[in-house]
Image 1: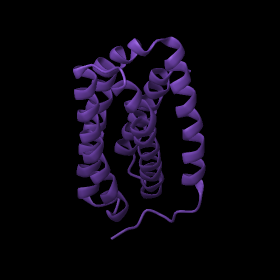
Image 2: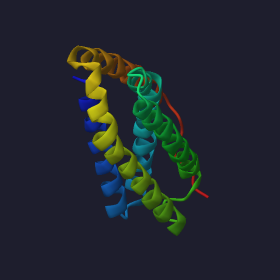
Image 3: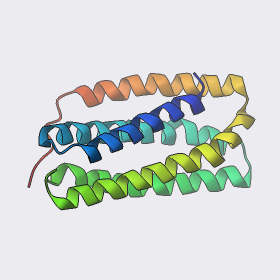
Length: 157
């Protein structure tokens, strides 16, 4: 699978998780969905930052450099919100607001990547996009294995 196809698939999975968490009122389901969102976004950001963004930046254009720098900054904001999620009670109105803002940020980021960065990444060529995708998929397996290790519940205030 190419790097861009892998990332598009992950974007859709995370968007779906955000829709599900917003629709459910069940406390336990919200806690589980929150943990899943945190894990998936953390893994997604790592593979982009470690593998995909350096490959895109390697294209060497000013546009590639600018898109990658902006993407890193967007990740920084998402990470700040992710740090807050485990300490907010899922029944608190602040949880819903924070989750809405996070979902909107992630959707904007994913849409921008797909519209601007992914077409630019095509300059890498199909073979390199496949190779980068394979490296990313292998890294996902490692990171998801680490995330599956006991990490505790989402804390409640």
